[in-house]
Length: 258
Figure 1: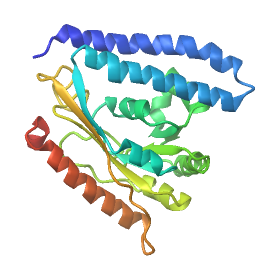
Figure 2: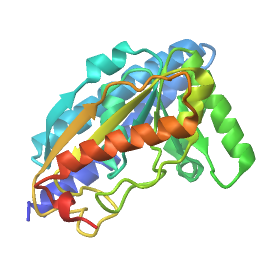
Figure 3: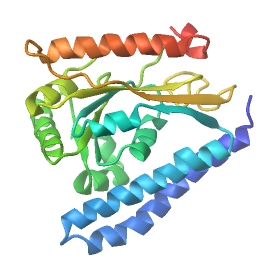
């Protein structure tokens, strides 16, 4: 097993950095209240810089994992406004993507806004909260997603809805594809793969026994065909991602996960 104290340092530094981030940003966000555009830009740059240093610098420097591949990013950014549909296995997924992709909004579960940091970000940032059990919440989320895309930004959605417990993709929820259909934007499939589970819904993933390698792949965008529906696009993206993940899982702990 890797050095458990190093993981404890990593987790401790995450909570410390959250406190520092709030302490630095809160006064600036308050001062920029009359200037929402400047406030948004400040928060985007600050958050991306913070996450780049933390998840792509500090944690790899501790030896907790390596990022061995980031492919297709420039091609994905060239698409312009798009829905990024990503698989979801571990807690670091959003942090890694937010550090890489500018002008990125994220759809999250409404229960996360019970945490003060997420509540603040939901009010000043492109965090879209949704409670799938309430039709009014889903309708409000769809409207918020359309606003983000119409402003020329990108939207990250986890169509599985939660972290997968195994190597298999969970069934996709239609939200991401309905949003893309309504906004007339393409869907970019995104794969985030680690060689062993890390902060996943898998026993032992808090302190993995092996060092992790991360692969982040932005696949070619799926554009709308004349006879497409949200369901047909969803099925096409699902099959592409499942094939790619099967290739990435080969020879890793995930391959034998059930």
